[in-house]
Image (cartoon, rainbow, N blue to C red; front, side):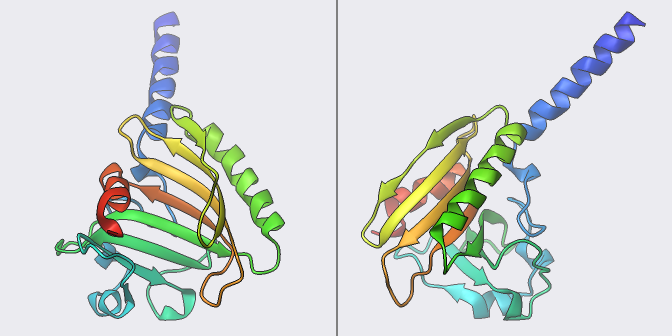
Length: 190
């Protein structure tokens, strides 16, 4: 009986440990890192929604809103930004961001962000948690990073922009592969 109890305890501990160490277990609007984007959006819609965010073309981004007539069913976010390798015919997702717009109150964004971070701390138990707040050209960003052992990240951020016609304050929850983050930092905008 003691052996059965020990096996049960070890099994449950191992399951929570593996779940917390793999960002592919985390979903945004039903999509996970590694998913084939064609399972969620038609190729025609992908081509229509392609954005030109980056100077380097290694990755392609699309931004999807509920009114974009895709198969996505939005439950939590006002938009999603999806990134995949440009030459990948399977459109395997490398980075996913869920966005909630906060036009009226950045304080509400921060409250929601704090709530999400608190919840994530119980889910991502084997991660290094790091605050990464900074002032940028367009405004301020308050973020918390959950750094996995393989250097993938989940990031919760509030973007508080200076008044601008194309920038809107928002909450962003991102799941990103290490390779994508390195590319963003080293090549995407150069």
